Image (cartoon, rainbow, N blue to C red):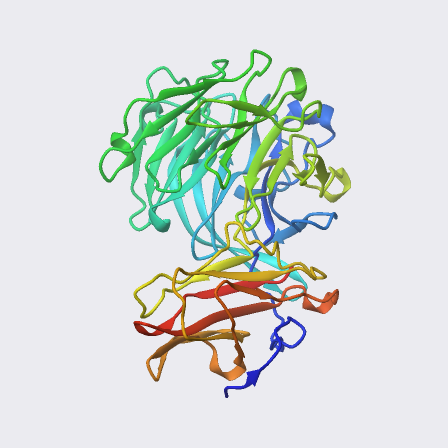
Length: 472
């Protein structure tokens, strides 16, 4: 049933189906159960695993239930002088599932797990869809961990790094490439890199890999892909050397301008500076959060806003606000039983899906960043922006609570939304900026809304890509 409405707001959009579809918009935190080295932090013997953190509302992390002990370290008191047992890294795949890198005990298998997180009742459950073995950890004093994961090639492959690499696993390589279709792992040897690789980031085009240098080196390096595989990448080239006070690099991501965000151990026990923004072209280094203590064990840049999240060793998660100050989202609480924050991932709350049909000019949603901010409950300034150089004669916007099971052809257009809950609005422009205020109504949290536009321009009918929105 098609209905023509006049005004656009979340309040009048069709929101009968309020069940959350997944973890979109939430910070997903990978934790491991630490060894005796963490006793001074008060987190010895705490459970690892995966936890969800709201991106703006402070509170306790939400535990993802149902994960195997290999990803939680449940019931263990690891006796190690470094590292631990559980989840050490995480990356989001395009379909909204996750790759989780394990920190494994000596004598056990170290693997990458493919995990789906789903809302079940009032809680969240993790389901292992597949396990990708990397190798058997020998009887050595420390665990071996998949310390970072970067998804490449549209989710067909992943790059990963290893903490405490051993000759019996991938020949001692600290980097590897995983084919997610076949499970085949290809080692990426780095001469002189030692056994410990902590952090990586891959450029948007998938052709440049940034990584930290050997232990105590303080260097940030780049590698260039050669051909279709990273296994034949070029030799690392130095980008910049971090300040002498930095002991080691812990985490890395790229911001929306292509600059590196690098979290480090700072000086002794996280003394500042410990968080940096680096221009990989000029090598210019900017200190973030100057004077703020903390070993920055995890960093992530939120795609929809460009906001930087950081995780502190033995502490909690937070983000940097528009004034450059740190806002805490969670604090460490031993009674709630989570371990060391080791990695962050996020499926964006706003994502374009499918493809444009028709038209000689491109029509696309602006989501990285979205000028209207996050779809937060109570965000009266929330808006959507569609970009196009065209000047169509007629434009409509459609809202629905679901996607169509398959694209539906309708008189020259292609509908990507569920027609059973469809609402149509007239759309003026260009520019195509749609004000969509979200009322401060708690029941809206978790709702999913899907949007698409339709146009007639000089080339004929045009159907835009779809846009999915998860209200937070």
